Image (cartoon, rainbow, N blue to C red; front, side, top):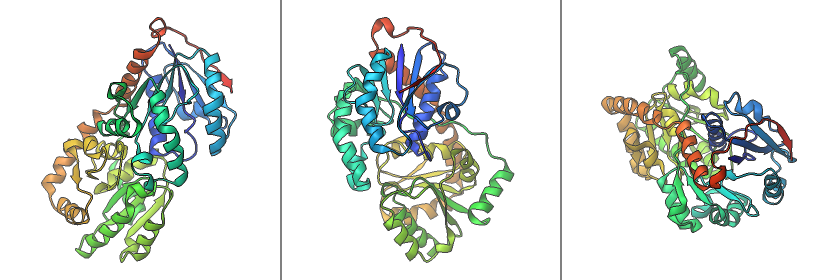
Length: 389
């Protein structure tokens, strides 16, 4: 079986979706199979270096488009890529970043991480909201199968994209257990992030759906009540950031709020492990991968009750209604409850460890084999070369 994977969203400073795409690709290439994979990427992305060593050979199909050139990427993906893949004899196209080319007539699987552009367009940039409103429903209906990371996302795809439930497959995301940070690394992270003060942590692009403006207001209330902690928000500035900037300006404890900006994934484990809590007060999430990444290093997690977050953390995290009173009272109460904190640390590690990228890849491969032409589903076609688009 020859599978093409559209990795054209992978470039620049990686978001959660981009990390998920890369881990899915690595997972597929590290399975003990003899299928052949073609990875479609942008012309200036060092995909071999980004993926690193993998078990299976693969082909690179490089689109003649540079990183950050959104319109040329969309046009090439929608109009040129289908023809290129057809000439290469692709059996299944896997689109792990929401959309597939509408001109592709072969078998396909689309991974839809969330439907926020349809369910809550006010939480997106106008460009993203328009783009996905136009292309996401027809892309989902065109796909042979739709993969989603959670039951909550499955329901949303059924509702907002009009996809029959029998064509939807739930494929939870995984977590790559890092090398556990040493006590020295954790202490260094605490010093660098908050000057040795205990801190609460949030990790994400600063954008409306993450609800960091509310988090900053709650932090002020926690400090008024005597909480000694600082607040650290790790992530790049995204879009519609004015509410967060205004909340920062209005905060009575601005000196205790730290925004170190975007940090590479490899630098995060000691920072997360040094935090007292990871806070995920999102207005919507299709999965909530940072929660698992905190659990795996032993940091307790508090999440909102929106989207897939309760499903993702299960009983191993604290789920709070997205209301001011619930968060203003609930977080200090948890910090004062040593037994509850110990339970969450103990429960979080095995809960997160059960979510592996290998399992994600195996579930995806099973979908590919389900829809591939029977005579080609297990065909051996090994090779390794770069193909210019």
